[in-house]
Length: 98
Image (tube, rainbow, N blue to C red; front, side, top):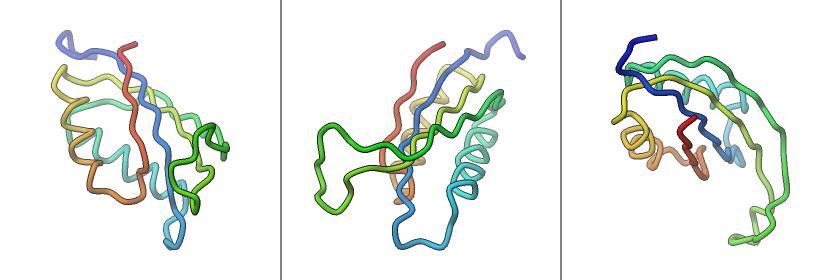
């Protein structure tokens, strides 16, 4: 790990309704974006499908949750959120400093 990298834990809520991509393919795509941002993925944990406590879309009452631990430069979380904002397979993104 580079001295300028920080550790992060990201939680992604994935939505693959009506898409041919599997959850694993979506996760691989997210990992690829992290690597493009000069990050290093250390762990991936597929939590599975969970129901939402507050439903904002009646057609989507639950989705697959995935935790990804990674090390990256300080600017990477903001860039990651911005790149995944246009990806319709990633419903929500939460990034915490670890």
